[in-house]
Image (cartoon, rainbow over all chains, first blue to last red; front, side, top):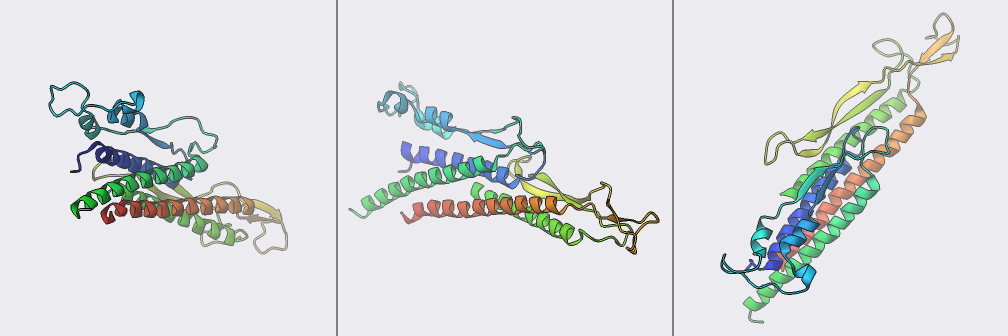
Length: 137
Length: 139
């Protein structure tokens, strides 16, 4: 019931956003720590390719139920999807060697929150649909 | 879960910045103290922040906020003011005042309070994100 693409992509996306949120929280926590270098989480590109070709070709992908079937098995690559966590060592405009920019971090905080809430809304809607079907309309 | 860790991270920073605030208020309160238990004028105190690493658990070495490593003393020379009538004046008539710069302490105070606010924002954002996540169960 819950192994459709939207659900799995939602899970992968929201956990990646939670990781990014963690990194942002860490950066904001260390805004006054001398020498601290900001952490960054990137996943958009990987997630897009894990979801499949839909984005680039605007075509629906055929379902692969056998490992010998043609086409990439989108669900499998989504399950193995990983986020990239890195420490950014770029130069700092601050004298204490810390490269956290509070404004950028606050903007990322808001962005992450909105994206997360969006995914949660979609997943909640999905549960609602199943519930409607269970109750017979 | 990951989002709970963010609250702990922000919490550690809230504590650290409260300590920073306390240190600043101590410095400001003693900006004219010429006599201390150790003798000599009051020395400015500096909170030393260090990024905290997770020791055990799921992924050791992962950063989990900030902690105040120590409260260090500022070793820079005291401010010498010519005031021969002062009981703590040296034979030359100079009084050693603390190496506290009120302007710098005020600037640090602003920075501490802004950082505190930013971390409070993180905590409230985690709350709204959790609320969004629980919407799934409600359907």
